[in-house]
Length: 161
Length: 438
Image (spheres, helix red, strand yellow):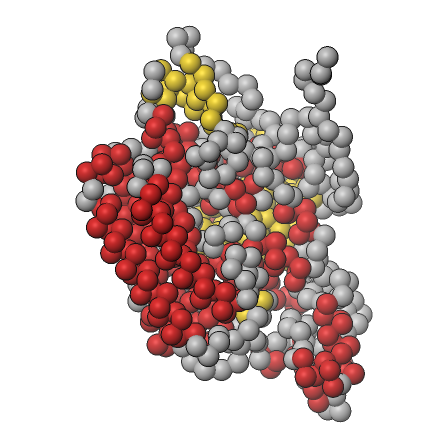
């Protein structure tokens, strides 16, 4: 408990311009920051002891501002703690700095977020679709993408003669 | 896929997507210098089934069968993970007996998963006998699962607030038989493989990954433990009754194929230990959540419809935002578990309660909020990230699939080794397509 407050204080002091809130709903420690602070805050957390990147995902709050929220889950082996880092991303400028230089699995995770939500990770070495095919139009996990929408078959590369 | 070869004198080879030795539909692009892999790249997405999009359009109860199809060789662990995530959001603790049942069934699932992984490793090096022994042992365990759950593969056994049904009366004997067969299979496999020269030559120092690299790639589960790193969700974040049981976490040393094989073999032994202890300790009692524990929904027991406590007297806890009186009309019915069938067939209240539970707009309505919960899956940390907006459908459900991270690091594990080593390495990480691509 003390360590949590200590961490909160340290982040608040170091990253005043990015810090928004530190809450613990349902017992999950959640740090809310501005999206510009994602890279510095995550690299600080990594050095602080949160060694493993568990997950990156996004949530689409359609009709709210900012529309998207990028969610990172980190794990500290030493303290046996998890932390969630959230940052709002606007629809007009869906750009976030990549964390591929900190964790290697961020490569695929960020590709998935780009594929599903259309959030661009700036500086990513190979940002392309991972679960859907290249010719797919739109981003399927966005709330305005219809559940039962069908897309036409991909055109044949070499049509029969 | 744009793949840039590192050298000019090398050959490019496609392995997959549909390759007879592949355990899933996955494409590996290889750059070869003779028989040696110089560079590799993995392409996935051939089995994407839009699990997350579907979950957003189904009720909380309807999602349970979909979770079976994630890791389809250990479906109960997926069920437990999902149901416990929703329970964390609802703030329920299930009764002790249900916790024991969940643990026993999860561990049986873990054994079947490990057997399904270990059999093919041996088979891919030509040891067909081991594969058949393991499939036979798995079959006996599937018999146990079938007797309890009614299905072999897609079981949907766990429910939010408990489990579907109590254990059958002959469960103990069945389990004893299943476990004896598994133990026999383990003895035979140890005899056939563990000191086998050919097997050791093919697996020792093949597919090595270091501790640091494994953490950097987000590896968890047996693959991380085979590098000698101690991390197990059951020990680090104990859930259910794992903290009451005595078991060890087997570790490897070098992080190669042989260590992964050995860690999985020892984990089966530990799972058997857990099952035996849990069977001894298991109390007799209710399986589903007792109504009194379901604060504050539980204020009225519908089976005594004459004795209603006035809803105005109920004090809602602040984390129940989204479930207030005006938003949820039938708040005074117990919403997490369907009523007992006798009640449904004999009383109008029970019938109403039954329908209210199953129609899509009502049913289980967790409070607003977001939770992350994870269990130790057979391949690693299986996490669920759930966002609720207070309605009867999940606003967002994301699965942290252990395979996804394992496959992201897979090219690192095969670069520098022979083409023939790819398949055993691939088998040793036990990729499950359903979980990888969701």
